[in-house]
Image (cartoon, rainbow, N blue to C red; front, top):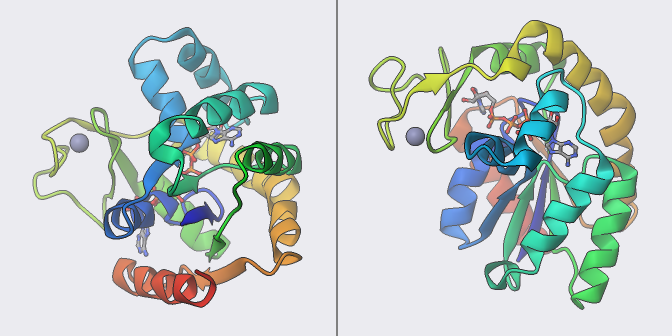
Length: 216
Ligand code: ADP
Ligand code: ADP
Ligand code: ZN
């Protein structure tokens, strides 16, 4: 199974991918998480990417396509993967098609999580992320057992700089102008499924599973 998880920032892609990758044994590929991890490890790529990310801008297509291309060539991505946060521009969607063609492979499904703007803002502003493992929490909707500490690994929780209000506005604008057009791109192929993201974590997950059952 080869799945794309789409939706505006804060829609719940990361949260849903946690369970999906376990249940379907998928290799999780999140470009945002790859950039943040590279930054945590003090890699040049990560440090440069963070300059754009922190302002709520996109990292260039060239850099992003290249890290995805390399990642897809690793053996664990050969059969099954879940891409979260990529593609984000039409140019990236076209680049992904070229990569998959070369691998003689294609996408099974594109799941689009639909959430309204007010909920997006609430979710992003209340989001807290583990510094060590990248898991996401929410101050009100998914608080950790112990305040400020990751349930899974004991790491410290922090607020992403790009989740502060000044960057959030930028990210939503970019989503509307650059990322939304991709939905049409996949809808035309008949592999797109919209899922209502304005529900509990479990209900959204159930609907994603149903949608996958229809196309996979
Ligand atoms: P969210 O889950 O809130 O949408 P991500 O973790 O997916 O955020 O991405 C965080 C940031 O990383 C994006 O705002 C962008 O700056 C950068 N980024 C992630 N994926 C891409 C991509 N495919 N193309 C360009 N920039 C990206
Ligand atoms: P994305 O990866 O799409 O940016 P996340 O999975 O990180 O989104 O979720 C954004 C924030 O919203 C997190 O704080 C998360 O805990 C919260 N969240 C995600 N899904 C739901 C939901 N169905 N109900 C309430 N809060 C949610
Ligand atoms: Zn953790």
